[in-house]
Amino acid sequence: MSEEQERVSRVLKDFMVAMREWETRYHTDQMALLESDDDTSDCDASYSSALRGIFNKFAIPDDRTWARLVDLGCGNPPTYDPDRDIVGNPEISGASYSVVVEQTSRLRAVYRFFFEKTGDDWKIAKKETNSNGKWKKTGL
Image (tube, rainbow, N blue to C red; front, side, top):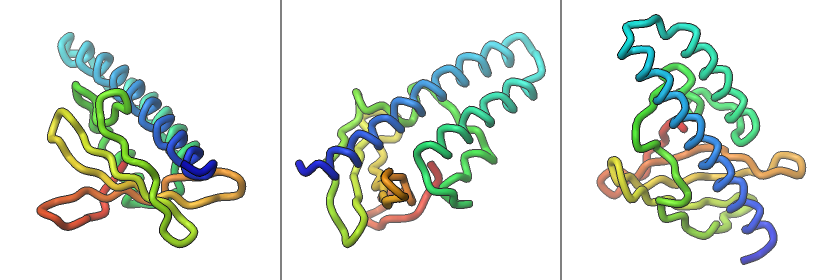
């Protein structure tokens, strides 16, 4: 793997770890509040801010890609887990890279992440989900 491919792979795996930790904590806190019949507004605001921070660090701003900020979906098991899921090698496409990730739990979805270089860093430009053999843009 080239140095650039390794950098792209590291960004994706770091993003997946950050998202796994965010979703796991949010799910735990959200469930505790719901079970005790407490208001979740402050919790939602706090996790929305934390999610925005993750997206700012790892992704290029885009309404569709960042749609999860509108609906702070969380579940157990979490959506992303680089230790559980099959993460492919970055494939070059012009000046960008794409990486396919296959979930091994939940919906067993297949995602394709596209990366673009911004300055010295690689960031996620978009994510697609394979549905019936067709790739469709989806939120992070």
